[in-house]
Amino acid sequence: MSETDSFIEEVSEEVRKDRLFALMRQYGWIAVLAVLLVVSGTAYREYSITTAAAGAQQIGDAILAALKLETNTQRAEAIGKIDSNNHNTQSVLNLLQAAELSSASQSQEAAIVLQGVGDLIDVDAEYHALAEFKKLLLEETGLSEEKRLADLTAIANSASPYRLLAEEQIALIELSSDQVEAAVNRLSRLVEDASVSEGLRQRASQLRTVLGENPDQSGK
Image 1 (tube, helix red, strand yellow):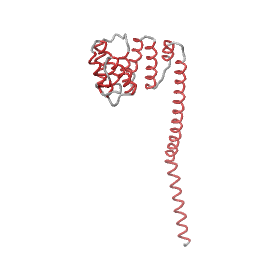
Image 2 (cartoon, one colour):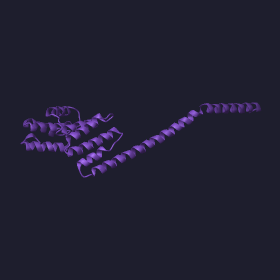
Image 3 (cartoon, rainbow, N blue to C red):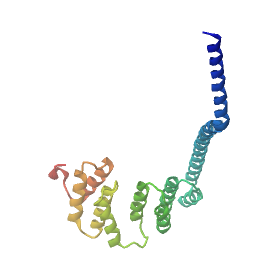
Image 4 (cartoon, helix red, strand yellow):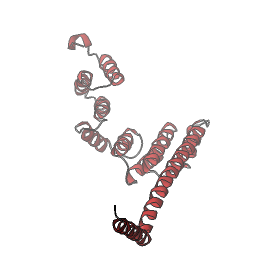
């Protein structure tokens, strides 16, 4: 390579360096900002995960402490004092509190707590469905038998995961109104349903037997 070519190559290299440094001075802040965003985003994500885990553990500890109290009323009161910003978690708290209130024969108070699940926004559908079904199981809430039966029938005719449990409750209502044959037929359909749980199948079969239906005669 001649001295002239070597000189030109050196000049070209210096020009490229100058241009690179100029671009870095002009746009380097973008790269720095991108790095800062990635680092801060990762840090915030880790902080959020840690905070959520700590909050969940705190709520879990509070629930365990409440369930160790002596009476249903005390447990319900203690659970009612636990708050969560997560609406699904709050739904679980409401369901637990309602269960304790129901066990303490405070059906109206339990219904109000269960209604609180329906009033929450951004709650998974299964929590709404469970709260609505549990409200129908409560006694002495002022709900007429006709309305209760209509709501249970709607659940039984839907794709709800509680449809078979609703069928069981309808059979009990039919028994209470002396519709024994209708109740036995409904219980028989429950026993024969392929998706029924073993516990529900046993309850329906036992009740059907008590009502005088011989399982052997129906092929069961």
